[in-house]
Image 1 (cartoon, rainbow, N blue to C red):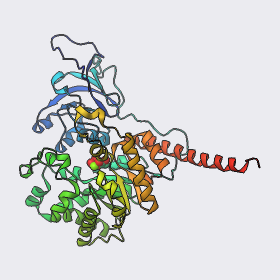
Image 2: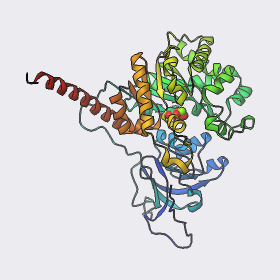
Image 3: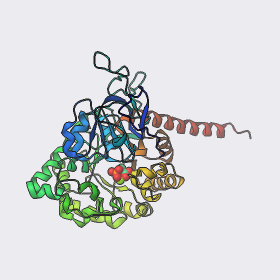
Image 4: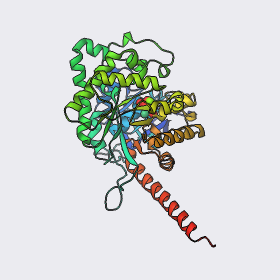
Length: 455
Ligand code: PEP
Ligand code: MG
C-alpha cells in the first residue's frame, strides 16, 4: 500500500485530526487512548485498561493485554493475521499492516483510530473529566432493526470463534452455530508448543485443556453445532512459544508444516486432540463436530478419518468434515466426498492465498488478495455444486464469508451455510434473507411468465 504516514514531530504539537498513519481497518469501531509501543511480549504487562497497543505483530500470549486495550495497531499483517482475527472477536477496534506505526507514533501520545476506515489521527485534547471530545461509546455496533428479531434464513448463518472467552458474545448474535472454532488459539494461549505442554504437564492435562476450552463454546451454543478444527498453526507462530526452539525454520511457513500435514506426520499428537473431541462426545456434547484443515486429496482425509476411528470416534455417527483450502483439494472434491465426510468448509483465506499465490500475511501484496477473483468464485461455485449433488453440506469460513457481496453470491450458488465474524453476523443474515427472497421472487415470476404466454 502507499504510505503517506506523517512522522511525529515531538517538538511541535500536531493539530487534533492530523493523520499519523493508515493501514487496513480490520476490526470496526473508533477508539481513543494513549499509545503503548510493545516491542517484546515481555512488555505486554505494561498495557493498562484503555491503552492503544502499537506493535509489529500481536502474538497469542498477548491476548490478555489485547482484551484490556482500547485499540490495536500493527505494522505487519493482513486481514487474516492474528491481530485481525482476535481483535474482531474481542470487539476491540484494530488496524493492521500500518507499516510504520511503531516508528511514527510515540509512547504516551493520545491518538484516535478508526478500525473501519483504517485511519489513525491525533486525538482531541482531553477535557476536564478526562475524556476526549471525540470519545466514542465502547463497542458500538449495528443492532438488528425493526421488530420480530433477526430474519430466519434457510441458509444457515454461523459464526467463527477463535477465543473461547468470546463464546458468549458469539452465541448472543443468535448465529446458527459455530462454523469454525480454531484450536490453535486455544493451544497457543498456553504459551507453550503442544509438544512442550505435553512434556511439562502430561498427555492427560493436554486433552483436558483442549476439551475444557471447546466445552466453553459447546456450552454457549448448545444444541447449535460447533465445528472445531484440529491444529493448524504455522511453524513461525509456534517458534515464538516456549518449546518453539525445536520448530523447523521454514522459508514459507504458510506452505509448510501445518494443518493436516503435520497431524498425519505426528499422529500421536493429533490423536490427543481427537481424544478431547471424544471426551466431549462422551459427556453428551453431541453438537461438537470435527474438522480437518488443509487436506490436498482423499488420502489425507482417509488417514485423518482413521485417526478418528483409532481414538473411538465413529465417523458414521459423528458429523465430521474437511476444509477445502488448496487448489488440489478443489480438484479432488469428488474423491474427498467419497471418504464419507458430512461437510466441507471453504477456507477462502487459504484458497485465495494458494490460487493467486499471494501471501495472506504480507502487507506488500495485500491489495492483490482478491476473494472476488473470477477463478476463486468459479472454484467455489464448482465445489458447492458437486457437494450439493452428494448431499454434503458446504460453508465458507474464510474472512470473505463476512462480506455481503460474497454472501449474496454464495447463496445464489446454493451454499448451505456461511460462517462470519461476530460483528458481521447481523448484516450477513440480512443479506442472506434478501438473496433468498430474490431467488424465490425470480422463480415465481418465471412461473407466472410461463403461465401467461400467449398461445
Ligand atoms: C481459511 O483459510 O479461510 C480459514 C478459515 O482458515 P485459517 O484462516 O485458520 O487458515
Ligand atoms: Mg486456512
